[in-house]
Structure formats: structure tokens, C-alpha cells
Image (cartoon, rainbow, N blue to C red; front, side, top):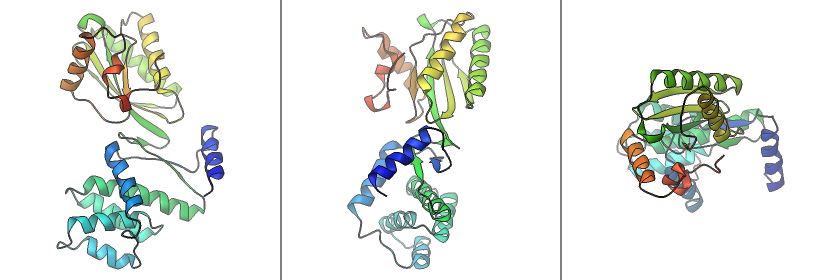
Length: 260
């Protein structure tokens, strides 16, 4: 596809035409996704296959070496062939070895290839570390209460209701809300073209107007989840520095674009 055509197609998605859009469903490490792309670029000759059936059989042969299976998985993902797609789907479902995550990426690539072939139209694949659903991307957010005060039942109720109301209004989904002593984690599904930071900051502002008293300085990422231990360290590191930006404690590549 020409560069100009690709730009027009992506612009159409932003303006409302989502018919050819595919969101990466399975969350996969961003670095592994980049490694996958680099592998395709660096090994163009090695990932060429002529006999898809023979390659599928070799993939499922126990004596096949890991590196060879990795090459076959990648090669199959670039074929707009239903048999290749089903083979990758089966591999992901039945295999839990060191190639499982690699196979998940191959499966997503293959799905886009097959969909493009069947519809006779190009597809746009949007990927992230946490994946998504439909046309929505998945985000992980952290809210906290100033001075590490205990979150009350009243605050929990207000925040939960505001999150759920906002999600319905924006055609998103709140997958989970987990309350700890002085901070909260939220999994949010929101359409890829919508501003997740504005969405969540507005929720906090509305919650605080009703007496919620949450800090408007929040962390948002779609790269990976953070454990309770990691979050506590982020908060401690933020408090030990003369810095008002909580999200600055995240690695640079995981920080949101801007802060309201």
C-alpha cells in the first residue's frame, strides 16, 4: 500500500470509519512486539515458506527445535491463509512453553492478514501491552488519596459510580476497580481515538466535587500492569522527590502524553 493511502485510511478511522480496524486483543509485552517486527525485517529469506501444510506439521513435531518453530510461527503469520490462521490459533490454545507469547503475536498478525484477504481491503492493527476489545484499548490507571489517608466507603462508592457512569457515556467499560488503603487501581476499556487522560481526570474532578478528595495527579499506562509492591514504591519515590508529577515516576515510554 502507498504511504498516502495508508494516511487516508488511518484518518478515516479517526473520523469514524472503524470497519477495517483491528485492536490487539491479547496483552503482550511491548518489547517482545518490537522484537517480533525486527525479526521479520532482519530475516526476510528465512520466513518464506512454500508448503504451508508441511510447515504446520513441522511446527507440531516434538523434535523440531525452538528456533525453527519460532521461524515457522512468524512465517505462518504473514500468510493470508485460513489453514495457517487455524494452526496458530491451535498452537496458542495448546502450548504454554517459551514460545507462547511469540505465538500470540503471530496469531494476531495472522488474523489481520486473513481478514484483509477475505474482505479484499487493508486492515489497521492497533497494538499495546495490555491489548483491548473491539475498538477499545485497555488501560491501567492508579489514583491515590493525599497524605495516605485511608479511603472511606463513601469515597469508594462515589468513585465507583462516577467511573461506571463515565464509561457508559463514552461507550467504554470498567473491567475492574481495586481499592487498597490509600490508592486505587482501575482497568479501563476506552475507544482508541478518545483521550484516556481527559476521561479519567474528569472522573476525578467530578468525584472530588461530591467530596471524594482524590489527587488529580494520576498514572495511566497501556503497556503493562503494576503490582501493589511496585505501586507503593512509585508513590514513595514520588514523595521523596520535589516533584508534583506522579506519572514522572513511570519509565518515559510508559508515561501519558500530557497532564491536564
